Image 1 (cartoon, rainbow, N blue to C red):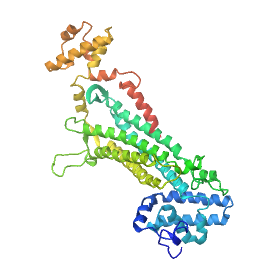
Image 2: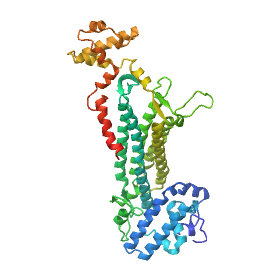
Image 3: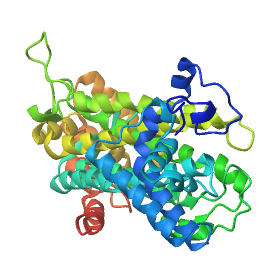
Image 4: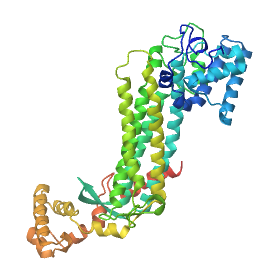
Length: 470
């Protein structure tokens, strides 16, 4: 390097000699991304190794130069692993940091690495490689949570739980059916992320700054070596596309929505008013003042962290919405948002899996009491009449009036004597009591996808084959 080695501008800068002065120190700090894009170091080295190998095969540098560049890049990787590669603000970003260190190691040869590429296509490649790996890492986390839900469901096929609409008691359910609903949501999340991965897995390397390069590079060679499925067909699009970051953030936001909905239910279930679950000491905290408290911190934090991921999605959309083609410095703002969205989603999936694996215990007797002490079997009274030829709307009105009377008298439907039933309609017989027993109410829902025990068992078998055999 020259005499101005520590200055980002002028003779020692990573850009051209058009600049005579270094950046103002505050602007240098404001401009630099090395503080966070160092997270892309391994991907930057991977992309640079593939690029150096391609340059040699295309004759743009000699084969020996290609080998030496790759050796230098691997030396940087080893330094990073040992903790001795610690670039500062003077490097501006991870790309310049690697190139500068390569020049220090190899001399003038290091200056050949950037042949035929720009930071614009380089950062796009690095970010896609990083996100592709993180999507691959999210899949087993999603499946771990699915397994935790499945195992609870498999244990609670015949456990009943009140089902709600509008947070009002609606109809009793198999607890397994309730839990499997979240398995289905997470499966959509998993498939959605795999679909996003297809559009992440497109290589921009070789698009250069925005217009491609006159040098005879082989874009498809580097793409294949890096595991990309294909390359961008348009160089302008290649360096300015951040759709994949938005798509991932939207998919992550939906994962968080589903985790938050489950969290809200666990919080409600753990309350004294519901008392459907007990929280284990390993997954709950206490109060600094009230010694009796056991707080559901895990689901509360998951619920709260949704806002971070939602905010990153909105931030990315706002950041790119007005950008003209092609690359703009605004794109530097994609990384911290994406990094945090990934990290938050990973952490929440892990925490919820642990909570379900060892943090909650369903209070079966309390659940049984809950489903036996309400009017959630009223629809089954109407269905009983329908099966005996009474039009549904007529049956609906009759039962509505009966429920009103029972509420006034403080009795449940199951507590009415047969004479009262028959006064309401002559179609009622002794069998009405069996028909409106909570367990029979659940068992009767035999339509495909329903909460009937036979249908839920089929779904358990389906998920056992998918989750426990993989």
